[in-house]
Amino acid sequence: MGLVDFLSDYVSYRFGSRKKKRRKPNQTVEIMVKMDCDGCERRIKNAVSSIKGVKSVEVNRKQSKVTVIGYAEPSKVLKRVQSTGKKAEFWPYVPYNLVAYPYVAQAYDKKAPAGYVKNATQVLSVAEAPDERLIMMFSDENPHACSIM
Image (cartoon, rainbow, N blue to C red):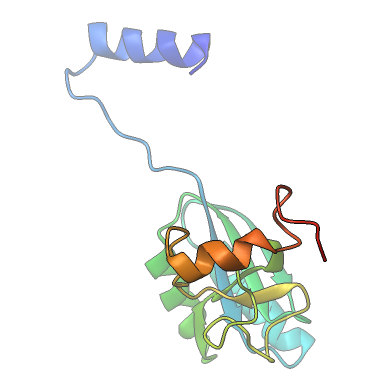
């Protein structure tokens, strides 16, 4: 919080109403929308940019992705995109390097853009399991692994 914000809050508290207004957080909403042409892209961009609180709209037709930055609620943005007649859903993919096991059955998706996998909960094995300890003993990822082989 900067000095100007502090002073404005102090003055509004001291001389204004006692009720402090909460600001909505600035957030990024990513939506997957199937777009076929420039007209679809333009229609979605115009519909979303008319929402109050939207700072910027970025449309990527190749990835079928719409990125909205601003103070708008994600559900309102999704409903506005769906009102254009297109099928839309929240962006279900995460970058490949953020997932521990990207090729498990739930995460790998052939329709995902390059460098992305589906955002699925992954069950990680417990490192204290006896067979897991034996596997990690000879693993290439373990820097303290046995180097007999």
